[in-house]
Image 1: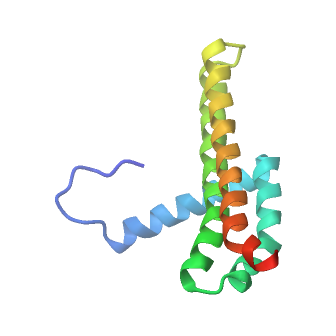
Image 2: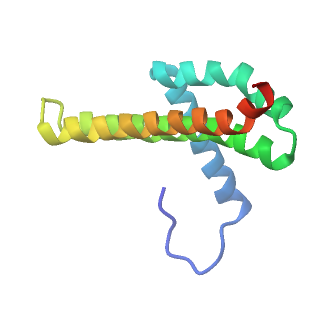
Length: 126
């Protein structure tokens, strides 16, 4: 939600409302998006593995952060799909392109996970 015009920083109440809206968005994505659910289920074993496999705090952040980027991209892709479906429920070339590009963004973040995990962990296991 957009802030009202104000020169004062956000107060605790506004920060709390933003948090509640974020949790609502996560809950909705989990309920209606099977891809987001699958990625959340993959986080269950991979997040602890990232923390255990990283030898330094920077490695742990890179391993875990790459996983969180996938979830972020999936949320943005789902938002794009929802808006496109609302605006253009019938087939439209540009709507299809927008959806395909959102999906491609998720794919690129998944490639990033493979690259980060491979670069950090493969030398130890090979």
